Length: 446
Image 1 (tube, helix red, strand yellow):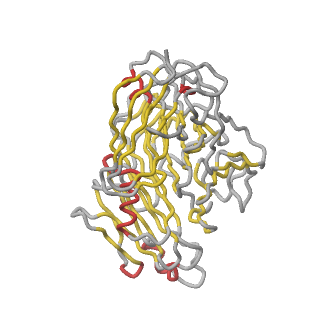
Image 2 (cartoon, one colour):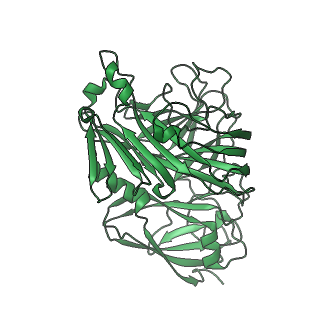
Image 3 (cartoon, one colour):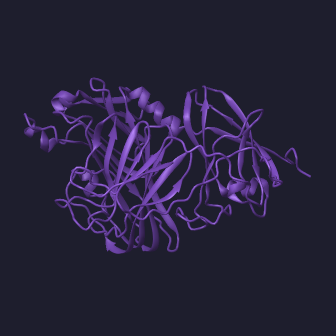
């Protein structure tokens, strides 16, 4: 990740060593061991730059190592050179740490990306040791970070960018613009088109109106795979409710929470994909807590009558629903059976897909245009947005633990329903098969 100059803001940055040879030039430090890993594509889907994540708990259990330095980890294809690897450290807290301890903890996340053809297989060695290996030449991927002093046209503190997306993250702000929200995704642009703008910020829920997001955004993890920015709300103590929106959004929002809240926004290397998480560090919470999140956006800044949008969603029988503006219908279901929506304009080659954890969801809703806005369609209606909404249930959030929810936002380019479904399966719904092999002494070891 590269940091570009911009406005004044405190950034807590940490750079992870990118994998290199297990026997670095001029160094006598060698990995203590290595373990085989075979990754297989089993869903019949092509995988391109697909992130793979394993936890520190898995690696510690497989290796039996008493201590592993995160800077010692190297992922090496059999017969090849090490691939870019990243460790996002939580250090036993359940929350990403801007200043890591470099000790592999069970909740740390080890990440890399793979390219696999349908049903293909790739074999690796994961090398590890108790001491840090020398840094290797950095492969920072294509994610950049730019600081910004918020203004009416650029209403965000940090801008995450890659070759596909720009994501503006808004933290706390002394000047509130027309009551608009804070602690949110204030802009999402693809190919020069704003999908999410500050007038209708994405990634917000029932907690937003009553929570004081006190801090500016900070970078809590960066490397060759993804860069993650956090906003924080401290000393939250209130009952949540929602006003406005569909029945799905309003009636299902309930519960009390005391503790801290975190929102994480992660932009991935070489993908038009942004992952959003809301985490709760619980002091006390009601057992019936549920949270609704609404994502307002538009495929293009033109009239809905000109966009030619189609709303796609999964059906229980395995089919795909396809709704247009003229259908005057919505996609809504209770206890969904697959975790994706997509609104795509083939005419404009723009769109957005939402991925979510459907097993945790109570209700989902998608609409091309909200019903109460249809009567306003006219010459000056380019501002009108479409909506995705998801209500998550968190029935058991124990005191002293971290709980949360996550979403994925994927920028589309003329994909139809089948293609959107395959994107969801590739990134969320059909994980790659990982099989660990035997422990080995690496070449060059004692």
